[in-house]
Image (cartoon, rainbow, N blue to C red):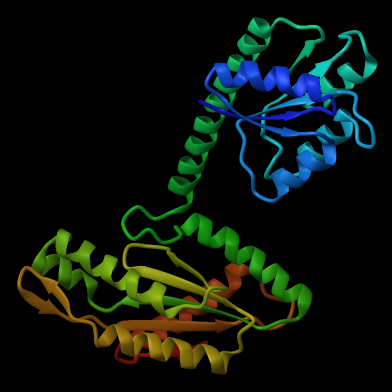
Length: 301
């Protein structure tokens, strides 16, 4: 069953509620003041629902509710207010503030139990909806094959980094990476082999970049890394290390060992006259230069 937090300064009310709730199979914890309740919650205690008395000394139920709704980690927790009158302006204020329901003293426990079930069902539906939205957001921002950031999300995140770098006058380098002769892999070994190469490469790239870097797959065999707080010299060292690591990879394709190489183009953010599109265009030009010079190398525009 559910874990219920009972918040009330009246010991008799607490004991009555705990008795009834325990008989229903719930686990109940009592807090005898608003401050004690918030302390329990902020220390990590988890509950499925709160029964919150409206009138308590030192910290009222309204003040507790306001603190709950202001905390992103606690704001979605269902709250049923317990009040002496449903005509009270404070009760209306609590409902407007986000309380899920209320009961009026003296109340029938059967009515309270029914309202609790409704609130708990609604919480379950909302949790499923949030999980679905998280999954949809992941699908919308993640490349299905490699699990890297997809092009759309990469551009959005990188654009924010460019704006931030300009505002704080910090360095930023864009790297565009292309797998050399990738078409030959597909032609000679099949598209399943090509997919395995891209998955293996993505795993290696993830292991090479910093936590602050933005790594994404932006095309078929094309990847990009946005490197904030980075100057060109640092970026060259990083991508050369990456290029050499990829060159030494051995990818098993149906019993055959396949190796790949990368061509990489770099572009440095210079002042406030560049935007993301221009930086990407310059990195693309550097990539073409690396290819024209024989591939398996890094070039700077």
